[in-house]
Length: 234
Image (cartoon, rainbow, N blue to C red; front, side):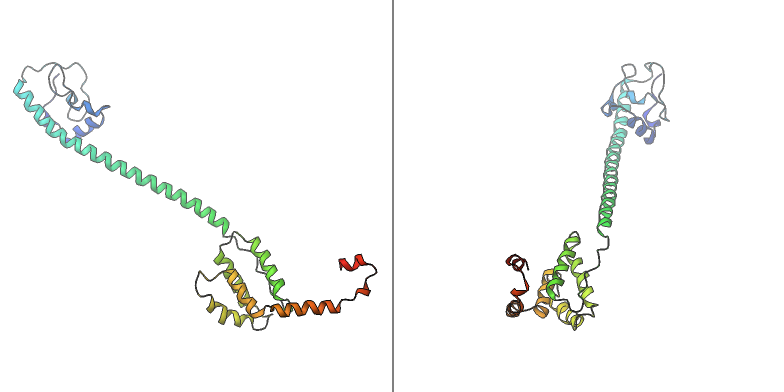
């Protein structure tokens, strides 16, 4: 059976036949019996015609050349469409893969962020009668226990706690009017900077520290201890 005329094949059928080729380079293979493209050994619906091809005595050499010219013209459009379709499909696949990767990365990021967004322990209170030094020591312990917390978050936690403090006279006002105004940029808003301002307002001078040491020494009574060992351990 000889192939049908090329003109009877819709472009969609030629696309189907071309796509089904295992090797796309075989699109212009010649049938040894009918001298027409082997790709056309199918009907207009794209179904393969079974059985051996027989030379159609009615097809002259000129007719075969015309068929080939028409076939090549149609197949040029088919091959161009196929290349564009493959390019589009590859692009879609890449976009889909990127979206999947982004969703996976976002889930991992959200999971990690959620783990780190656990509310930190309450900031130590600065109670009435407590000196600045022990309060700073308690802050240092708190900072160590919350070292995974971002610096700015630690700063905000301490600032908000001090703003609500009613135990230390004038502290809330000092924080609200002076400290917040002094540390007015993200770069300046650090726990270290905050502690330095607290020391400026509530810390003792070196002279005051020496005077306290001297005062404690003068009050010290060696006679209270029965032995030199007890004195050294006091």
